Amino acid sequence: MKQALRRQIFEVAIQACIGNKVIARETLSAVRKDVLAKCYGGDVTRKKKLLEKQKEGKKRMKRIGRVDIPVEVFPTLLRRS
Image 1 (cartoon, rainbow, N blue to C red):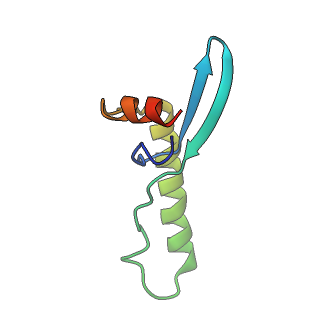
Image 2 (spheres, rainbow, N blue to C red):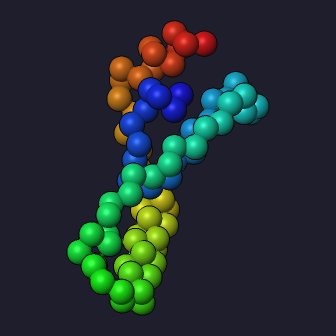
């Protein structure tokens, strides 16, 4: 499942279910943007602030974000089973 889907901006949990029973679960890790690229030097507090801001944004996106699954993925998932 992990190889068939693209990584999203936030962490996504993928579950395969039959009825109410979960038979497989994978977690796609989030794509990270390098927010520290413009920070060079030794100001640690600025770096921490940028990483915390990114973390809050990812948390917000996970709450309201949507994942689009391409149609081509479904046949590949069924073929691998």
